Length: 178
Image 1 (cartoon, one colour):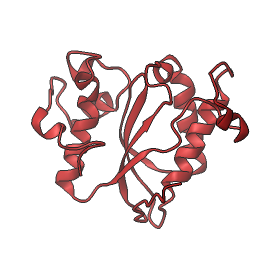
Image 2: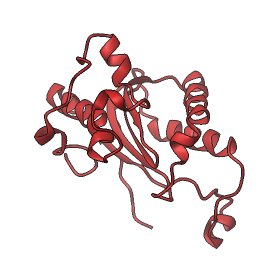
Image 3: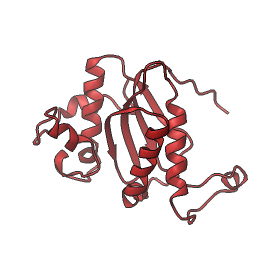
C-alpha cells in the first residue's frame, strides 16, 4: 500500500476533491439532502468553517478552514462519507475486497487535499470551485448551478451574480495544480 503523506497545519485552510467510486453516478445531487445532513452532523461534532463548496453529480470540491490547533480534516471526511453512506439504501455493487472490509461501494477510498498557501492560492481555488460546474458542462453560467456556495458568496458581496471567472487561472489549480 502506498504511504500517503498529508500536509497538516493546525487551523489551516485546505482545498479538497472527493469523488464517488462510480464516476458516472449522480448520487451526490440525487441525495443532496442526505449529503447536507451528513455535513451538518459532522460540523456539529467536529466544527470547521466552509469557505467554499460545490457538489457535482459524481464529485465535490471544498475549501475548509479548521479551528485553531486542529488538523484533523481526514476524520471529518470519514464522518461525512460514513453518514452519507448510512443514509442510502444498500443497492450499489460491492467488490469482494469491499465486502471483506465491510465497505460500501459509494466513495473512492481517498480524497485529494491541497493546503492553501496564500491569498492568491485561496482566490484561485475559490474560483476553481465555483467555475467547476461550467467546466464540466453542467451549466452555461456559474449562477445557474444550485449546489454551490457561490450563491451565499454573492449574497455576502464577495462575487457579483454575473461572475464568469478567469478561465486561464481557474484551470491552473484544483486536483492537477499546485
